[in-house]
Image (tube, rainbow, N blue to C red; front, side):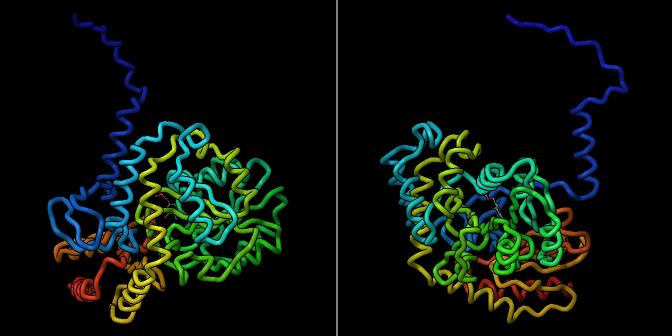
Length: 401
Ligand SMILES: *Cc1c(COP(=O)(O)O)cnc(C)c1O
């Protein structure tokens, strides 16, 4: 039987209809060339990918050590699925906390040489979960202007006062800290900035935190597994250890799997486990994902050649890429941006690389400041020396085209 619902009388035309507004906004973005679209990856993640039917060399993944499709991770995931299935069926605090999650937390604490670790399902959720649990009304967050969006969203959600200081501007940060009368002060920084690739001045940030009785939260999404002799990230890079540091990193980049974790003092982890809403009110991620991350961590610990190879490729690009107008930004990490300038020129440059079979994204405002549209190259241990030399040759040709 068909139900027929009498249509409501048409709204008076001055009442905006939300769907019309959404369409108008999309049209406007399209007219400005700002509409984003997804490419379909038809292969495993890696140096060589098939995207929208085309075979390309990719310089745009965060799979910095080439572990995303490593056989050890794949077989760890398969055998975990054979043993415990896929769905966890509950949150960690109910019955979703499986043996693999527990092992992964222990292994991460041991790798990081920190007392305790708590897993989160994604880095975005970890940042929401850590920051909203630690600060609230009457507290203050001091955040680098180039911090990842998830850190800013978390600070807003926490209801603490949010002070954003100019990128790496220690003097500006100090004057904000000196003026603050907040109960609790939390300084937050990406340790490796995702659009610039530079490393935060962590020892100086920590010194300011000590001086002004603040805590330092570091988001090491792009440093974990990449920086430090043993891949322990930015803390190892600077040889730092402090009770004031709240360390967060993700498992979906260099570690080749998915998820994220916070590492620090036992009391910090105990407290987050009791109070962090994005930890408590979500289903635990599948144990096979934790098993894959465990295999990734093991390779980070034991296979330092991957890291060495990645750093050799970074050096090769920096030594041999000679450009005229475009500018390779100062960066010692896997993120190697080239400032092109105008939006159209950056897009055209990315298009020329694509014609040559190389995938490098153009990053434009508002993701980066106006006038600094760039090609964002991400290097990986999965690339060969020949891949990077080819990239350099294609870049130089594209610049002079
Ligand atoms: C990728 C990233 C995140 C988010 O991590 P996901 O696990 O992808 O949610 C958070 N912070 C930074 C700096 C990142 O680069």
